[in-house]
Image: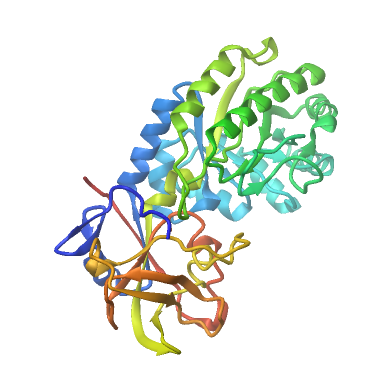
Length: 408
């Protein structure tokens, strides 16, 4: 397994999440499966970012986790919310974010979504020339100039990133060579020009690779601005900050990234002297703050192998099952919540309740002895957990969610 994130401890053997006992949280919520989010951990992540990147805006990509109490908390701490659908846009506005601080990216925006964004005053990150034309037409119908940025498909990617969003043919963004002409079209049409969104990849743990990508992004933004003749008010540098999920992975040195970016921005070309910069983060802010609690409903032995069968599974935590981007399945960190920190006593495989062999939460892991009724904690559940999982699969009940204020 990978390492359990720092900061978790036990009281009388029971895992504490935000200073609260896991069993008490489950009882208070009405049972399991249950996602618990520690808001204080999120706050500490935001503070760490502010210290490492003092002159850079922080945006939250709400696709990572859109649970309303968590989103409302995050919205108060960050400078902007980035959404990828009209549904997410409504959640962002309901969380209290000013429309001017919300940006809408993603390919395939429908005409109705473009109109809703323009009417609300949300910035649209245009993914193609055709989308920009439709946004301009929607603005004319509404009698309101749209706020438009251009999402750029760069000619590079973040080396070693988990998901590569840039470089080569991509459904995301406008190829860099075509972006200046589109900017000129947007400005000439009377839209409010908002800048560039340049996202090269995600889930990167290599600080040097992120430093290289950010330097290339700043240089690209300057070249595009000069060619377009339109300085960008904002350059969203994307995100890509990863967290360690698996055995052997090391946490990202964000301070080293921040130091290098500060140096790059100090030397930025004249075309960007009046430009603000933002970094868009999701999992790095909220991933380690979430724990998925599921209860053992059966313990069985098959051909000498012990299985702990739980009431949860991949319909709530698809990523932990290995079916969300993993090529070779690896285990997220897990623990028996009521014996947290106890000595390992047996090798078990922890599975969910679905009638499919894909529903595995941990393969061949060493844990303290666990039996029916015990709680299993799956860590790193704060990002791409419930919102990225097929809850309707096989008709099982949805998972519960709760947020705790946290503490030491």
